[in-house]
Image 1 (cartoon, rainbow, N blue to C red):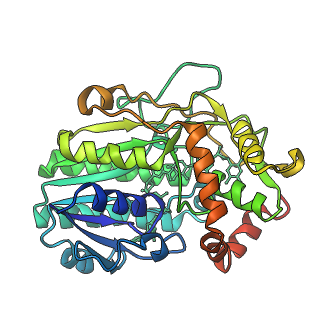
Image 2 (cartoon, helix red, strand yellow; image 1 turned 90 degrees about the vertical axis):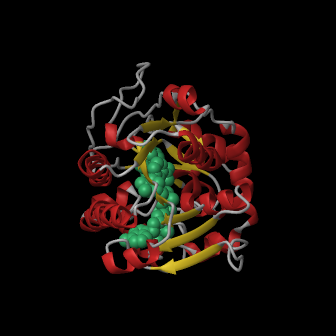
Image 3 (cartoon, rainbow, N blue to C red; image 1 turned 120 degrees about the vertical axis):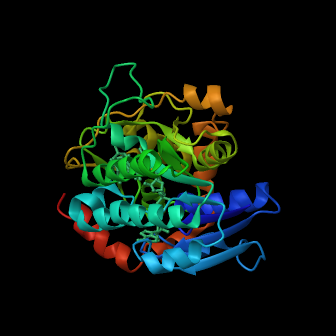
Length: 337
Ligand code: NAD
Ligand code: DAU
């Protein structure tokens, strides 16, 4: 099988490329990525040079480049996106361009290339927020209620993907997935930001009261879920994919990281809240379990410790990432907060 991956130089995409080349020894991957601030070819060391892997630098909004690069693909796995909520609040335009327009360009190309499957990687944020202290969880039939520019752009993309299935018969699948963690995650997201700040002797900024809840999914479980969807998922279907945490707050996550690194309790700094901050996410992944045999296998505590160790051992990776553009972003996002 030949898979056309978009955004394979980012966090989840690069983990997926490594996973797929390891688990599917005769398959080929074309990785199409614009190498924005979040794309990093260093994430793909080990894959590069092999005969089954090819990288193409390009923008998913460029229809001609996409048509040429996608030719001959059996399946598309679409990760490319602007992915950070805080950046979407600072500047929403590029989120609409990449996440909505880019997805539509890919859908057109996939129709023309007659791919057998178009898998769209989406987020649980499209469903909005749940309240603390409830047992509610997002399911495939939860109504959409996005509350920030990032999640609104992902929701629009999801609607387009479904519209191409019903209108033109494109064989699509969608996964709505919770917060991933693991190696190669850009240090703008909570876990790598906390780990690398602490390693630099800087405090971890905690938004608002810190009593916000996310469902944490180790990135390899996410890659395996996509594998199962490609093998066993039905065209036209959506699958909610989650991890093994149960209502763990940001405060608890940060405290665990502080303990793992032996840092001081005062290493946490409460800062002004994110506007329209979603209070709680939780995922009911029973449909994926029932129909695909999916279950997350990586416990949060064990794999958080391994993730922290990865950042400790790969200081050159994140120090390079945290230089340059990152400094400008960090000042804009956190100064005077
Ligand atoms: P990321 O920001 O780490 O990587 C995004 C990648 O897309 C980068 O390599 C970047 O260069 C590339 N890209 C951005 N704009 C592009 C464009 N116009 N053309 C081509 N490539 C472009 O993102 P991630 O965290 O790996 O997320 C991947 C996907 O998974 C996204 O669609 C995101 O919405 C979704 N998702 C992420 C999470 C999470 O916790 N990180 C959870 C659920 C869903
Ligand atoms: O739920 C899936 C989504 O998870 C993905 O679709 C997004 O691409 C991904 O970025 C992530 O979104 P979040 O906004 O949940 O992730 P983030 O790491 O930015 O924040 C996690 C929680 O931590 C959230 O409640 C905000 C809080 N936070 C975040 C940062 C960066 C802080 O308290 N301080 C911070 O400095």
